Structures are given as structure tokens and as C-alpha cells.
Amino acid sequence: MSVPSQNRSPFVRKDFPWWLAVAAAIAVVLGMAILVSDIYGQVFSTVSQGIWITVWVSLLAFLLASGLGLLLALMSLSEHIVLRQTARFYVEIVRGIPLLVLLFYIAFVGAPAVVALWNFLTHPLQSTGLFEPLQVRDFSLLWRAIIALTLAYAAFLAEIFRAGIQAVDAGQIEAAKSLGLKRFQRFRLIVMPQALRTILPPYGNDFISMVKDSSLVSVLGVVDVTQMGKVYASGSFRFFETYSVVAYVYLILTISLSLGLRWLEARLNDRT
Image (cartoon, rainbow, N blue to C red; front, side, top):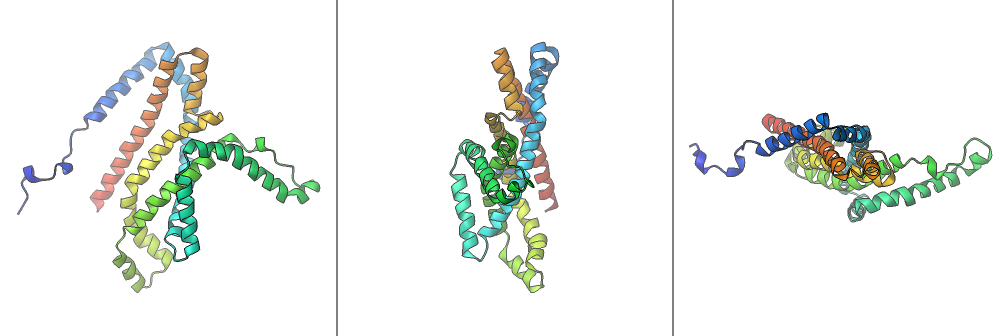
């Protein structure tokens, strides 16, 4: 017997996206201001020079963090206690450090330590002239920022991957074993396709958070959207116009990503 529509759960209703309509209206108004106003146009012209750096840092750091996070998740599910405890140690320690603190630590402590270690290991070759001594300034601030974001988000993504993998029915894994599938085949054909539906929403949310947190790299002088806005505002004292445009750019990026992820999630649910 079918359930009357009035008795269905309100959580399954699809409301008209009024929030998107309001956001689109605000975006149109600010977009018109950028086109018409010389001040807003100049601010946008300056800020937009950092969009590529913001996108590049976010994409690269998130891809690297995804790889490291998946490795940590598999380690945490390993049968070997050393691997499990190592992964748990990393996740708990890194998640407990504020991202800005980790960014400074990697940039001004980790990078010099890596340079010193490299020079120590290659000292015999440097004395023969095969290698030049590496200087701290040779380690670009852009890569220091990417490494810091990678290490930070890998800890969060590891927990997402772990939860998604553990959500797969153990009976299906046992059935795959009985069919003679090897461990990698079970992971690729059975576990990961099913875990993906569980992983996708929080995974997408972390990607959007990465785009926003990439603004922190401006404290290192990386010329992203936020840094270009800071430079323009400090020289022109147009703080309202500048940071309105900066917020506008980030909102365009994050809302576009959010809508794309919702569409992808709906497609996966329809296939299911």
C-alpha cells in the first residue's frame, strides 16, 4: 500500500532553492557593479590575478592529501599494529594542530630542516662539485604552503576514507574472497565503488574547505586572491570594495563546487 504524501518524511521533500536564487541575485548585482564601476572593476582586475594560484594550490594540495589520506586509511585498517598505531598517531596529532600554526611550522621550521638534511646527506657530492649547496630560499613559499595544506587535510581525509571503507558490508568482501579475488581486486572492484557513495559528501565538503583555507597561504606572501586583495587594499584604503570582491570570488568558486558535487551525488543516487 502506498504511503500518503502528507505522511511522508519532510526530509525527502525538494524545496525550491530560494537560497540559490538570492545568492544568484546578489552575484548579478555585484557583477554589474564590477562592470559599471571603475573602482570595482579595478579591484576585480587586480584580485583576479590571484585566481589561478588559488585554484592551483587547492587542486594540487587536495590531490596530494587524497593520496596520503587514502594511504593512512588503509594503514589504520591494516592487520599490523605498527601500521595502525602510526596512522592513528599521525591523524590525532595533525588534527590537533591549527592549520595556521602548521602552515608556519612547515614554512619556517620544516623547510629549513629539510634543506639542512639534504645538505648533510649530499655533502660528499657537494665537495666534488656535483651538487650545489641548497639554500632555504630555494624552497619556494608556494610549495611550503602546498605541503602544509597537504599534511593537514590528509589527516581529515584519512578518517573519511576509513569510515567509508568500514561502511561496506563485510559479507560482500567475504563473497569476493570466496570467488578468489585478490586483495587489490577486492578493493578496486568491491570496496571502493560502494564506499564512494558514503565518502563523496564529506569528501566534497573538505574540498570546498580546502578552497577557503587556501586563503591562509597569503600569510606567506603567496600571490593568491586574498594576497592580491590585501596588497590592493593596503595601497588604496578601499577595504570595503576590495574585500567585497574577494568574498565574491570565493563565493563563486565554492558555490559552483557545491552545486557540482550535489549534481554528482544525485547522479550516483539515481544509479543506485
